[in-house]
Image 1 (tube, rainbow, N blue to C red):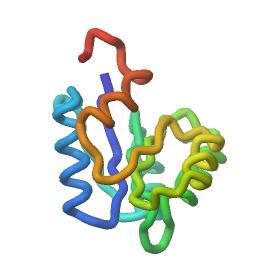
Image 2 (cartoon, helix red, strand yellow):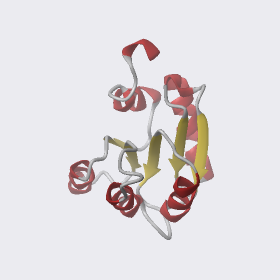
Image 3 (tube, one colour):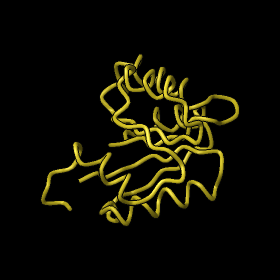
Image 4 (cartoon, rainbow, N blue to C red):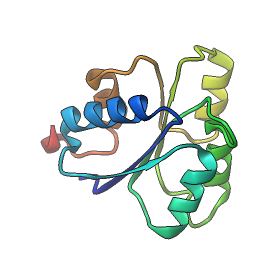
Amino acid sequence: MLRKIMIVDDSATARMFTRRCLEITGCNESEFVEAVNGRDALEKLRESAVDLVVSDVTMPEMDGRELVMRIVASPKLNSIPVVVITSAGNPALEEELKSMGVLAVIAKPISPPLLEEALKSLLPEEEY
């Protein structure tokens, strides 16, 4: 079970919607940590460990791509699975993110079934 999930998006509405989708997919027992951009996310990741990061790509200060690069480069953080949500619809970016180790790239608008499919590899079957 995912105990702590970080949601990174500069939109409070998008964070709320992502959280609700995660709850519907079976993560309703999880604790959620929210961050408004990549820089905020890294600061919070230094303070406490999480089991999953779900991040938007387009954000001010530090975007999702840079956040993924920092997570992957950090020996302390690089074991955390990352799911990226994007409205960009850019196949080259999607391929780049996956080659960096991103678990899944999901197009906006996200839905519980899309999120559930992305999380299947993280959660045992019996949790669905």
